[in-house]
Image (tube, rainbow, N blue to C red; front, side, top):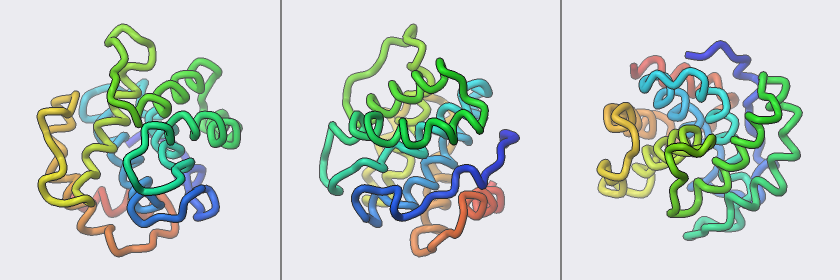
Length: 185
């Protein structure tokens, strides 16, 4: 796991525009955890922290739990500025913050960046991590063929177990989810 102060990434209910169990704290913590595992398993060490930051805000601006292609861009407009100083404290620079914004905006739409785009890798990590938590929507809701990384396909069973162990919990911190994940791995 990356060397980061996990307490920087503790979520609070009031960070979310829409109070939800489907897209709330548990889902966000799992996506954050999964971004770290996807990136590290794939050997994308430089992208781990920007992907974690993107996962932190990816659903905070949702207005409902339905299909929505706008919540990513809403998060970039309202949540990225609100958490920019936290991301800087975690070690992100101006370019990293730009990439985080692009990844968050793109995570909620079907279009993909070109592999040559500077935000492609962080976005792909975020999209795969978010997709890996689709188990919360039902057993057959994750289509592995759409996952972008080999590492993501290898993490399907891990993601399911992470969901089963956290679905009915009320975690006090991100580190609590990390510790559960370490027990599974």
